[in-house]
Length: 141
Image (cartoon, rainbow, N blue to C red):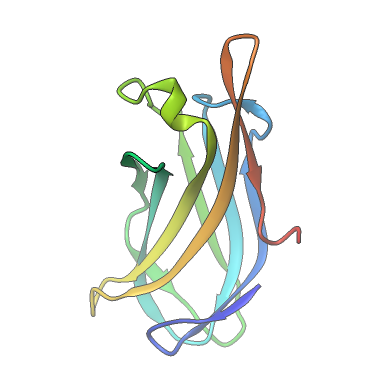
């Protein structure tokens, strides 16, 4: 996946892994990726989960990574993020059903402009009275 961004940088993902997958919704979440950028920048990744239904919208801030230097010249950059659980205690189960979006947002720390957002579709189902999640990796087309 290669994307020309709002800052005229091209970001190309070599790998993206989201684990665990096909599991209980609130379980831990680990994201790892390697990507290349056409521009050097000091960037910060932010991670969000968005539930958007016809009657309400919830944006859950999952966290962010500390700002770090992103290199260019075809050198790989890495991204690592881990949380112990996705907290949806304040959201009713019926609101979570259907689909949601896991959003990975890269912001240039110097210009404060959003560089890229990677949207990862999530399918939420209910099995044995538990909410289950499946993330659809955009690199596995």
